[in-house]
Length: 295
Length: 266
Image (cartoon, rainbow over all chains, first blue to last red; front, side):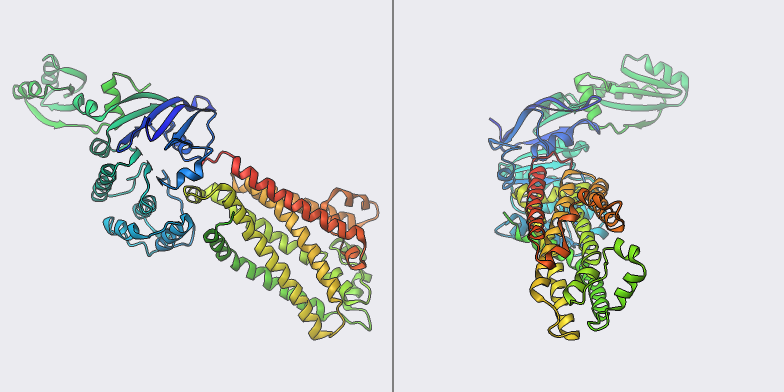
């Protein structure tokens, strides 16, 4: 049995919104990626895990305890980064962190300084005046400072610069190595690729897919937009037997899956002037793998 | 059942507001007590005789020559009803609904602190503020009277009057706090939480104004605070205080239960 279990969780907000019959579990020492487009039900699921919402049907447990009934008990060993950072007005970061520490009745304050150093955070300024990235760092410190066993991270790196995103990934990997169970929702491919063991994707409140991240990487589908000298060349290029997803003027969009060499040899024979790999969202990549469309 | 860190934070957040209310009360108490003249009847009584309707609406009826009745008529019919009531409305919203509305409640609940404890602590913050305000008014009244008219004030009756006001304000506070716990939107919490006591107060003003509308007094809980009766030592007035206090306990209790069991979209 996993550390965190979600069993047929249902909450219907009407108009197809909410979560429906959702089930998955997270094991000890595992980082579980939780993906899905906006409004898919990620935050609703997380609110149930936090004990903010009572399930209409089904249940969720953390460490064998019911997330609604035993929420106070669960919170002792839980760390949470909310999707939106809203603190109290008029507190400085330092005051907030020390408030949270006393409010939680945390025994030692040991990790706070280490975490602030790690994220190069000087928490002495007013929270109201902090930039989004700085607020995010305060939220990260607040979630990790009491050394929790289970972590629920809702888009934890939003607003962070790439260097800090990298530090955050390192932190998550360290915590994972310590045997903690981590649920992380994210839109950043690299973050998920480097930290997660398994990934679930949720669409319209339903579990659309769940698999190991390795499987996703192995089957990763890449798109290339190739610009040729003229439209005739583009039309001929499209006839070369590659998987083509579209031709517009002198541009051809090619889909490549484990056959990059074939593409290169074809390109050698044509007047190619540019290659672009358009950014694909994590969900897009994942859904291509599953052959689903985004309807 | 109480989280002292949160309590301390709540008190820190309230004292500025308390200071403003205390300053307003100080001003009124000082001015009105100075108008008392045991020999001739006060200047205010002259007003009351000249414009009985207008003065009656705000609960100021011509008082007897006793200082405690004078205070009751000119301070405990309007000033000591409206200002602590404003404190209740603002404070109740600030302590619960605003945190839920903005989302900062997330941090109070993502910690091993029961929702019951959070609500109870916030209630304590509000009750402490209310108690401090009424206690301050009591001491201020006594000191003011003793300086200007030594020995004139019936201190026992004056204290009882203030206990009565405290019971009424706790009841109002209970209504505001319950609304703050029910509604997730600050605007509804304030709208309903302020609307009910304000409506009650307006109905009382109407009932004071004219004989035709006198029966309207049965439609408002303000009638349970019978300040004349408290001064006169009527048992009914004491029972009114008891009912208000019991009502306050029930309202706060309900508020805590509601908050502990509701869905929070934070």
